[in-house]
Amino acid sequence: MRSFLPYAVPALLFTLALAGCGSLPSPRASYEPEEFDSTTTHTRTFAASQAQTCEAARRALLSQGYLVTAANADLVAGRKSFQPAREVHVEMELRVVCAREGGAGSTIAFASALQDRYSLKKVNNSASVGVGAIGSVSLPFSSSDDALVKVASETLTDERFYDRLFALVERFLVVPEAAQSEPVAPPSPVSPSTEAPLRPVPLSPTRG
Image (tube, rainbow, N blue to C red; front, side):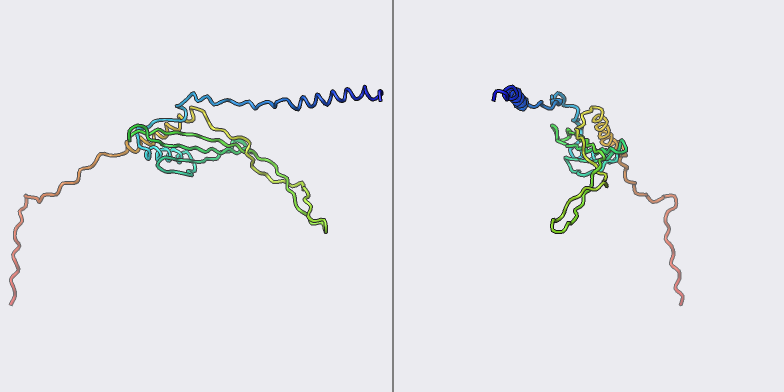
């Protein structure tokens, strides 16, 4: 029995060390905390009504090739696809919410852009083969299909992006007003000319 003691002690210590490592807390994923330090990146105030602001936002998205998926008096949403690389696909979803600010002639617009990134991945195919009384067996084959898999999703926080968006919305708010022409006065009725006075036309004599 004594001959087994020198081997049992190191094994016991190794087991305790593994147990101690397993009880250590797992490291937390590092991320950039939300500081809520800016209120101007995603917002802009316009001297227009809710309906006018959202209509300008809808036209702004349409002018840039976005597919508008929702549009009403207080919300506009659009989606656009990009392909920056051969096996990379990016989808941008842009939402603008219009809320009345103060009086009826002022609106604050809230904009948020979500960017989803997809990558082309190989997906192996498998087929089920019937084997008599055993049933069906799923066997992997070497053939594969290409599929887009989402690899990242991020809300854009670039101030320059939203500055350009709001500037374009402002253009669509100003252009219709500037294009309005001055009201044209209705034409005045034409007065009869006095140069040639009207003369009665004599009737032709009746033939008997």
